Amino acid sequence: MMELITSPEAWAALLTLTALEIVLGIDNVIFLSVLVSRIPPAQANRARQIGLLLALLFRILLLSILVWLIGLTQPVFTIKTIALSWRDIILIGGGLFLIAKATHEIHGEVEAREGGASDKPSPNAFFWVIVQIIVIDLVFSLDSIITAIGMAQDIEIMIAAVVIACIIMYISSGPVARFVAEHPTTKMLALAFLVLIGVALVADGFQFHIPRGYIYFAIAFSAAVEMFNVMARRNRRKAR
Image (cartoon, rainbow, N blue to C red; front, side, top):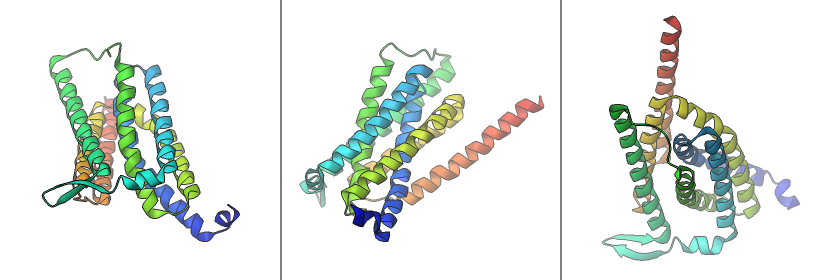
């Protein structure tokens, strides 16, 4: 353990992996923010805390079963020239779930605006939010940890990077969730991001890798444009 603490290579690996885990955690934060915006604030805060705690637990659990996890990357069957592993199947399933969920939410937002439907949540809304958080946490955790295994050899470094990233996700998720809830157009943008992320997960499952840099650049650019829109609307209201 002392060798890791005094090793410059170990610190470099920790910083690099932590930064990567934070970037990969953006998907988790966006999904959580959209889901909790549909339930009352008190429940939303509890759901967000449960979701991030589960994200941390899933990641540490997956790290503790590395041998089994690495086995998930072995091909189980082939479609034409594409050999699919259990990891690929999970990514495809998770991506399709994200696309379906985001599309359903977009449809609900549009219908609510057109028909003036009530936004009152159903009695079981909290339960279904937690179920959806569990499903998507598993998918994002699997992708995150397999990436971590490819970048670091020491499990202590992996666990430390995951814990630091989850703490930063927890700190940032509250302001992001509040912002999404307060600005309907931002929620629509977040849902569009989830469709994009879902497509990327499905593509990864079929071994057609879309560089994450392109996706995160598109998200950052769109978010910056939306921030200018929010500021413009706020200034127009003040000017009246």
